[in-house]
Image 1 (cartoon, rainbow, N blue to C red):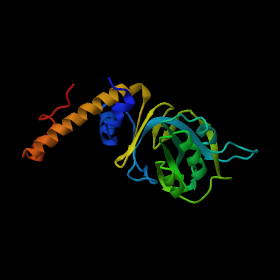
Image 2 (image 1 turned 30 degrees about the vertical axis):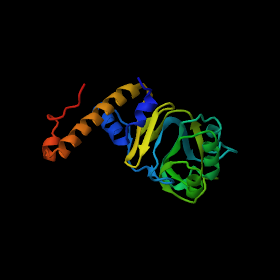
Image 3 (image 1 turned 90 degrees about the vertical axis):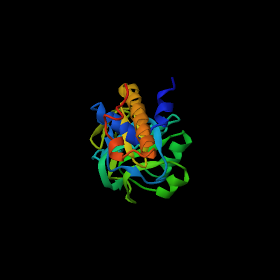
Image 4 (image 1 turned 180 degrees about the vertical axis):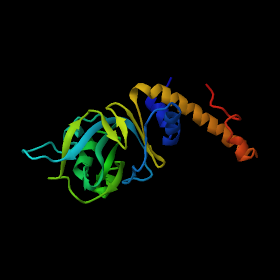
Length: 216
């Protein structure tokens, strides 16, 4: 059987979101979209960073710098900044370093800057906004490679990140097999529905669950 990565690569965020919904698992996040390369998708393993306001008391860690130096090919940098759109927590230098380590992409629950630099690197960055305001003196890294919350969804290091033009979803590593298997069945059902529509069946009939149940 193909590995989880290969199987997820054949799915989109909609199928993954539907599977998470059906299983009663949180995972789909709204309001975060592709900015540097709007048509690009991200698939990889989450490496997490928590950002927050700078506190008094001397030097503090620069957001994501230490994590970027430890990235493995296929990793996705996930930065939780509580959705703040008034300050950047990712930029061109970090993008260059992440790309050199083979990062699959970046997800920012907040804002970032240097859109063109990251785009020229071929690095997909999904975020809530872009802003020129620097993080320096404003926000710092609070933790890395620890669970964070992105849009109300808990994301742990090692969880799967699926992002494309339709949206963003996180798949808990411990639930990946179950989620992927159900998403594959959902896709197969939708393909049957589409075939029925192409054969002239009314769409209301083709979309009825009793006509094309999700096979076990």
